[in-house]
Structure formats: C-alpha cells, structure tokens
Image (cartoon, rainbow, N blue to C red; front, top):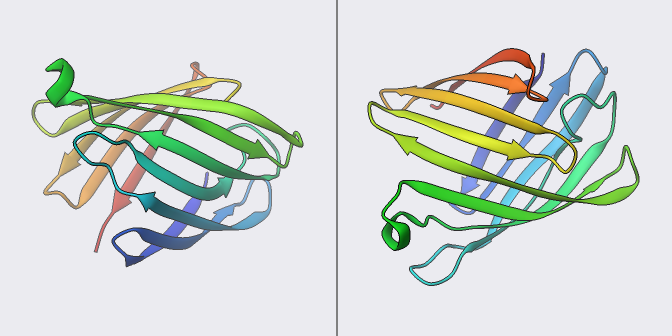
Length: 149
C-alpha cells in the first residue's frame, strides 16, 4: 500500500510526498512538464518517485517524452518513453508505456518500468474520482483510488 499527496503549484509543476508503509519509506514527488506537447512535438517531462513497483526501497529520477497520437493514427492512444535512474539498482533503465482511451470514461495504461510490465484499467467518475485496477508485475492484482479537489 502506498499513500501520496500531491499539489499542483502551476499547470506544469506538481510536488508532493509519498509514503510506503511496507518499505517504511517517505519520499518527495515532483513532476515537471518542461516542454508542453504541441501538434508536432512531444511533451518533455522530468520527475521523481519511489523506485519501481516491488523494490523494497529507493527513489527514481526520470525523463520521458510523451505524445498523444490520436490525430495522426486515428486511434485514442498516447505512448511515452524515456529513461529512469534507479537508486535501488544504481543504474539507468529504459521506461515506456501506452495510454489508451476507451468510451464511458475508461482508460488503460500499460507501464514498463525498465524491468516489469504493469497493465492498469481505470474508470473516471465526474472527472474527480479515478478507480484503477492494477496488475503489478503482470500478475499481482491491486487497486488504486484517486480524488482531485
């Protein structure tokens, strides 16, 4: 179980704190959109988080490029890719994933953290509540709930 609290300081910058009681770990969360996505250019994002799902400790520093390709390929998809530095493993890892929008406020995000794949399925209620089923490491079921206010 992991608990996070984040605050969006500006549209391009959010900061927060994350607590993982199983690892007795508290860490800083930062997400900075250095370059916003345009019709021709992907977004460039820097951030920090806990290290990969399943590691007992450590932090991750990441850089990603993401692009909504729905106009170009006529499918509701947005891939991302990048690199993360894992303090747990003391090395750089390639990361990536694919976000897919579905009707009825549903979506899926398939996450590759550099070692394992983690598929998710989400339902958004009133643009404020997000319920997510996570299949951590492709085999361990979990659930997440987020609220924005």
